[in-house]
Structures are given as C-alpha cells and as structure tokens.
Amino acid sequence: QVQLVESGGGSVESGGSLRLSCTTSGASFSFHAMGWYRQAPGKQRELVATINSSLITNYADSVKGRFTVSRDKANRVYLQMYRLEPEDTAVYYCYAYEYSSRYEYWGQGIQVTVSS
Image (cartoon, rainbow, N blue to C red):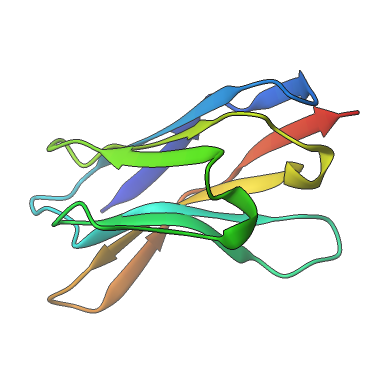
C-alpha cells in the first residue's frame, strides 16, 4: 500500500520561507511524476509544482521564481518556498503519479499559513 506523508508546514510571516517534504512508502517503483498541489479555503485544489522522472519541472505562474520543486531517487519530493505571501496560505498536498497504472496518489495534506 503506497502512502505519502507531508512534513514541514507551519505558520510564517509574509516574506518568510518554508520547506515541505514528502516521503513515500510501499512503492517498489519510481513514480513518473511527483509534486505539490494546494487548496485554499473556498477554492479548488490547484497545481503548485510538479517534477517528472526526467527532472522536468512545471510551476503555477503564481509561484514561479519563488518556489522550487525537487525530488530524489528515494521517491521523496520537496518544495522550497521563498518570499511567501498571504495568498500562499493553503493546505498543501503531495502528489505522485505512476505511469504504468495511470494511478494518482495523494498525501493527507499539510497546512501552510502566511500572515501579513
């Protein structure tokens, strides 16, 4: 059973930084794509950043230049967030995609709160 667990969330002031980590367990394969989504209160879940097995990244326009997604060979994915803004406040979800089965895996989510 594949599980994704996020860590590193919390509360920071505007302009601060946080680093999210996501560890996985139960997978005997390397995920094709991993990344992060977020959901703010009253809004739909949206893509933040993804990175595939070729280390090609994709970012939401709102975080380009401020956030950096990375991954390692142990199926861990990270999100380094700089210059955080109140608009970044949301629950952040770790995401992993297995190409062969077309299956998506999600973490439980972790709260990031940015105060002005």
